[in-house]
Length: 476
Ligand code: 2HG
Ligand code: ZN
Image 1 (cartoon, rainbow, N blue to C red):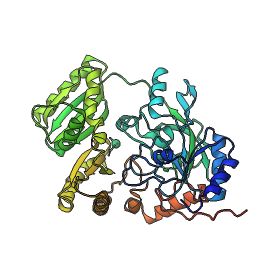
Image 2: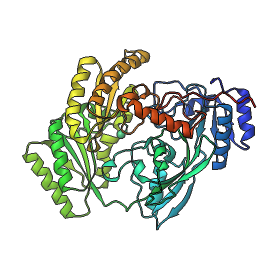
Image 3: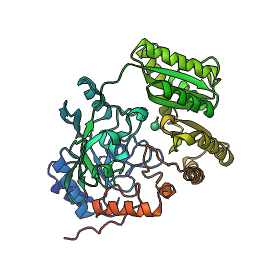
Image 4: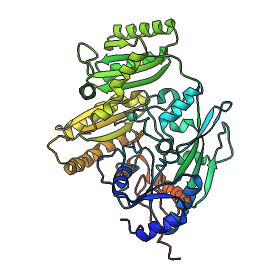
């Protein structure tokens, strides 16, 4: 248990927050103390389930006074340990704050509580003739608060941007116990620092996001998908350039033959092509009419004539669109049992082939015995590198080895001006390497920002930034 959390402080928390549901039930501690990270054991002291903004405020005020560390928890689908509570913290779950609070068809915004699931926002938008574009495999469980706290990306960033680009306003509770509302749904607002954006990707370290106003878009046009096989990264980038110039792309994703092997095996999917290819692409594009399909076919043939494509197929209906996406969207789950050491890297799009090439050589040099599975959102420069644990290697040995690999691969990422987290966050797992992608001066400023919003250092200690010193428990 954390030094500051004991039966007496938990009782104080309960009495200061009337009606707050607090549990220390072992099964709930186990389930809510962990995200999809496989390298930590959950050990929270308690899990609380606030139901209103006022209850969150009371909770935060008491936690700040008592020095109780709080770990915000959404759908717990994160992959960097941002929602792990392994040190006796109190987990704050938003499972009971799942209301859609308002919809404005003129502003085209929806206001939701933090615990609303991403897919529920998508569905709400659809029912109102609009569209919420953030989409990824875990959208059925992940919550909006968590999406904002990690600036979730997904498969359509190429067209619509990240979660950051959908946030028109947020309400937060800061470590000073204040309820603040940022930007209030405005499109234009030039009144100084945009504090809303400080909370996007803050990983729960500045305060608790309790509500959000999200932009909705025009419903998408009918889409088609091209599933392509290519020989090399150079050819793949040429195909990307050609498709991007002549089609309205909404997604451009890639995966390797190893990724295909795992996703096919786990989901009993057929080989997409007669002859296996080293690399595969899923390209989705707007295709409202026959002319668009003809344009796509012409582009496909031009790429084939150039020798850039080994094979390819275009979807004929919506069912096939879904089937083709399964090859990409099912990869992460298909390898989760190994478990993999996950990396979520990005470089500028133009540097992707060089980066992959150098990474592959480096990994071959440092761990030729490990299987590496690459896939990702190549259209925005985000590559997921998953290193699979061999069955005969202990988890702790594998983790230690993965650390050595990270030291080297992140040095290369730094050399190429990339990022060690494109969309999953720094969390707990990538924290030791933050200084590979953020300068000392930047980290000092980030710590300063944290100090302003969270003077007691209660929010998500140890995540993103190293544990800042907490104030001593109040003796008053
Ligand atoms: C994806 O793009 C997710 O599929 C998960 O971001 C990535 O499993 C991963 O490494
Ligand atoms: Zn991803």
